[in-house]
Amino acid sequence: MPLPNTRPDFDIDVRPHIFHSPADWALFWHGLAPWFECRGYTLHTPGSKASLGLSDRFTVPVRDTCHARQQPPFAYTDISAQPEFIYDSDPRGSTLKISGQSRPVCRSRTKSFVPIQVPPFIATSNTGRVYAAQDSLGRHVYLKILRKDSEQLRVVEMLRQQKQTPGVLPILDVLEYDEDYAFIAMPRWADIPGPSHLLRSVRDVGEFVVDILKGLDTLHSLRIAHRDMKINNMVMNHLLSLPVRALRPLQHLDVNSSSGSTLRLVTDSRDTIHHRLEFGIIDLDFAMIIPQSTNGKDRLPSTLAWMQEYSALDVAQGELVYDPFKYDVGVLGVMFCEMLQKFTPVIPNLAPLLDRMTTHELTKRFTARQAHVFAEKYLLQGLSEKQLQQSLTTSNRPLPLGNNPSDHTPLPTSPWTSYDRWAYLPLSFFLEFPQWSEYVTPRLPRWKAWLRQVCETEEGRRRVKRIRKILAVVGIGEGSVYHRS
Image (tube, rainbow, N blue to C red; front, side, top):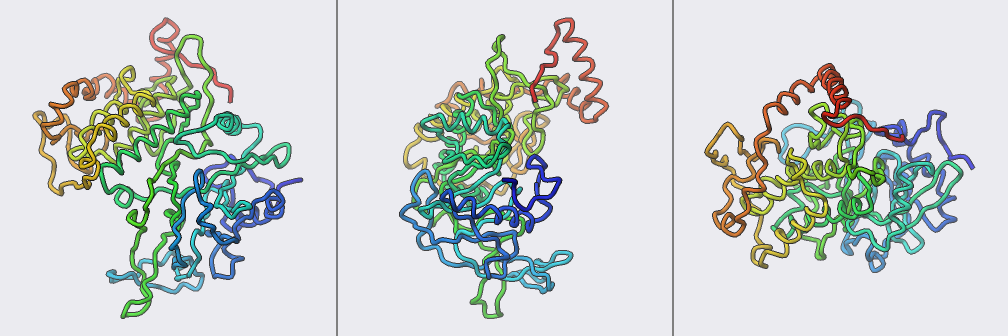
């Protein structure tokens, strides 16, 4: 049976979106609703068909949520969740005000936003590959389409063979559609909100870091390289009444304002969550099973190294190959740095962890397991209850410069490559962790800094790679490797 409501150019590998519009996305999945119903899954209703005035950027649950059944591996849900207001686009072009703002901020070029009351646990449109649904017991799930002849499905099948996949969102089911496509069912966990709303205490940071490192360790122990580590590919086991992220900003409507209905910025607070938040890794679109090599080195062509949101810079010097496992750790380390390095004065053990995850000396970089063990020991187990409960506070004043100001610019807004994570750590840390100096990332060698500068241009990269190939022929450096696409 062919997939319903698809164009001739339908291709699930197109990035970033596989559909031309949210309406096309909704039409495609809505056409699959009867097929999924026969297999025990009730798809959300597309926004335009929900009689709420929503666009197809949103989908609405069909069944009520049975909170008692939302138990692991499914996400917890808030029993007190009530209908709330969001804004959605309105073709009439009306304008709304946000409290405290002197000018309209809700207008786009052709549309403005209007407040719409929605039930709890609506979902948002995405890249098109995923759609929200509920199983036969009303539990919230996500369904994802993938090719049957794909590396992603091979990774999925390997994970399903495991009794547990700690730190990785489990796969509940694989539904074969035809000879070309299959669907996987996963518990619907929530996107992770921004750090200021997620992380309140030292314990919060430790649990988040440990859970994600546990997930990466799980993947690497199965020789699976994720290849796309970023915050958007991580989730938490608590569904908020409104989604964290959307293609349009989500706001709550303040209907009690004395000046009329205005929109004010309100975010869901972690204070309403009364269970231990768990975090997991998702999105195996780029994941690969790396075969065991005969020489003990794990290598992929450098063209496969993701160089977008969080680049570990392992191939920024024109390298021909890279280690995908070390790169995963480095990329995750960069993400942790961007989120957490400002907290090192409060959580000093973050400094050695982050430096060892991102060091340019690859022989010293932590493996996923080493990073997980270190984080569990020094960010959770080694701290007292009083230390774990300590609130996260960062000073507004600039951090003082070290002995050599040219080495770093230790400001809270500095990028991970120049931020001094060792500045202003308490003296007690250096006494309790005497091996600290072994973890400090050394200055980048001049030759490597020069190569990075040369490789900033396409022509520079091409020339450096050409020279590396010649040197590899005579046994200097590593040459290209074959990769089966």
